[in-house]
Length: 526
Ligand code: BG6
Image 1 (cartoon, rainbow, N blue to C red):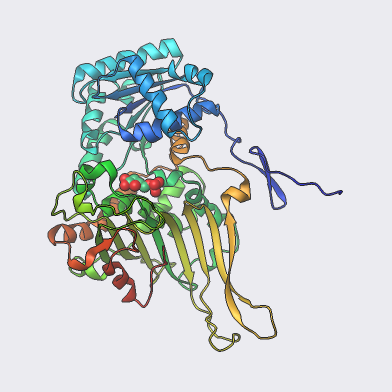
Image 2 (cartoon, rainbow, N blue to C red):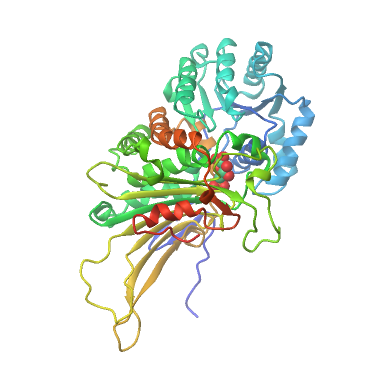
C-alpha cells in the first residue's frame, strides 16, 4: 500500500518527470469558413476527408461557423449526399458510425453541387451557394477549396474559380486558400505548367500542396528529435553516420486504382513526394525559426544540395520492380494476382510498383553519406521508417571471439508502429566480456497514452488556420521533380528487365538488393 498507479488519461499524461498535454490540447479554429471539396464522390473524400472533417467537428476543433460543400460530377440530391456522407463515416471514421446529435449538427452544414468541372454555370452555382452559406451559416466569406479530383483537372478548376470571381483577388471580405492533392504534375514539365496556371490566381502563400506523410505524428517528431535534444545534433553528420535508409513499404496492391497507377508508378506516387519530404526533414539544417518559411527554406536547401543522378548511369543509382503473383505472409487471401493482371493495368505494363534509389547530398554535413530510399507495393510487410546507421567503432577493445559489434542504429518508426528505437552494444551478463546488440525503444502509444490523429485531420485543420508549415512549397516540389527526372526518363525509355520482377510478399526485386550490395551494404529486412 501507499503507492498509487497513475493511469495516463487522454488529457494529461506523465512522461518522465514532466506532465504534458496531448490530444485535447487543441484549440478551436477561430476563423469561420466554408470548405469546398472538389471530387466529393471520390475515394479519398469518402475514406479520409469527410471522416477527418467529422472528427474535427466532434472534437470541437472546427470553427463554430462552418460549411462543407461537395462538388463532383455525380448527381446526388442534397439528401443523397448527406446519406453518402453518413455511410462513409460509418465505414471509415476512426470513431465509428456518427452519433445522431453530432451528425445532425454536422450534416445540416453539408451541401452539394453536381456538374462538370469545366462548366462556368456550375461555378456560378457554387458562388451563389457560398454566398448563401455566408449569410445562413455565418461563414464570413472565408473559403478553402480542396482539390481532390484526378490531377488532370486541377488547372481547369483553378481557371473556373477565377472566371467565376472566386479567386482571392475578388474576395475582399474574407480569405481564400486552396489545398491541392498530390500528384502536383506528372513530371517536371507538367508540374511547372500547373504551377503557372495555379499561381496566376493564387499567390504562393495561399497554396497548400498536401503531402499526407507530413501530417503523420512521427514525421513531425523528426524535427523535435533533432532540434529539441542536445545529444543527436553533434553526431548528425558524415563524421558519425555511415548511411541512411528510408523505407515506405506497403502490402496493398493497386486496388481499384490500376488506371491511375499505370500513369504513375512507385517513383512518382511515393518517392518524388512522401519520401523526398522525409529525406528533407532528416537531412536539413536547423531552421532559424519555427515558422513555416524558415522550415521550408531549409528543406528546399537540402533538396537543392542533392546530387543530380548522372543520366547515363541510372542503374548504379536506381532500381525498380513490378510484383508478380504470390501470397502475403500471415494472410488468408491466398495467391494474389500479379500487377499485370490487376484491373485497369496493361498486360505488358512497364510501370514499376517498386522503386529504390541512392542519393548523395553534396554539402558540408552529408559529404559521401549515401541516402538509400525505397518504396513498393505488395511487399512482405507494411512498414515505414527512417533508419540512421552510424559508423563502426574506431577501435575494438571488447568482445569474445565470434561476437559481432554491430554499428549503432537509430530508427524513426513511422508506421504502423510509431516511435523511435536505438540499438547499442552491451555486455552480456556473466564472467566473460561477451558483447551483444540491445535495443532502446520509445513508442508513442504507450509513451503518451494516446492514439495519433490521422494525418488529414491535422492537415485540414492547419490549412483552415492558415499554417502552411506541413505543406510543400513550390520550390521544393520543383527540385524534387528535377532530382527524379533522370530516373523517370531512363525507365520510360527502357523495358522492365527480367530481374525486376518480385513475388508478392517478398523483400522486393533482386535489382534493389544489388544496388546496396554494390556498396557492401544490405537493406534492413522488412
Ligand atoms: C498515397 C499513394 O499517396 O499514399 C498510395 O498514392 C499509397 O498509392 C498511400 O498507398 C500510402 O499512404 P500510407 O499513409 O498508407 O502510407
